[in-house]
Amino acid sequence: MTLISALLGAVVIVQLLAFRALITYLRFGAIGAATKSRRSSKKNDNSALAVIVFLAVVAGLGALFSFIGRLSLLAVSRTREYFADARAVELTRNPSGLASALRKIVTSSAKLQTANVATAHLFISDPLKRKINNKTSFFASLWSTHPPIAMRISILENRTLTEIEAELSDYI
Picture 1 (cartoon, rainbow, N blue to C red):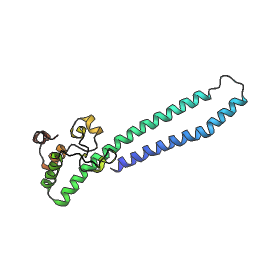
Picture 2: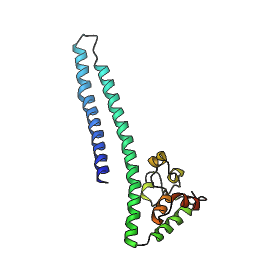
Picture 3: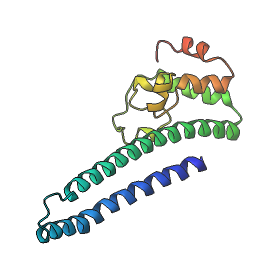
Picture 4: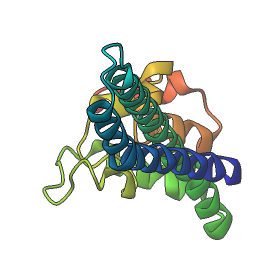
């Protein structure tokens, strides 16, 4: 968890540095290039190309780091759910009670009206009832905010995932 936090911090710092470099270049570099082009009668001035390349690199880095940051946020959210389950079992010493509560959550069909995409990661399970949070494939797990409830129940009860999925097949 500490490593993920450090990596996310590094991603944010790189994004801020790239943004500040862009602002600084636009503020001082573009002014300098405009002044230079007025003074110089040279026709092969490459300052406009340099600005375009620089902006493209900064935009590309910003998009890449934003993508990496989003995937990291989702991974941390899923990991926190597993840690919360482990801590709840440690405190209550009742894994079957937590598994029963998770079953009740998955069998309720109501979507929460107060939840939205920005707050979905704060809930015990996905309040928006999105199908991607019930799938166990690699790509589905990359984009889900919560681990599949069937997987959480199978860990709590020391049963296989296929048994739990068969049991909850009407709901997930």
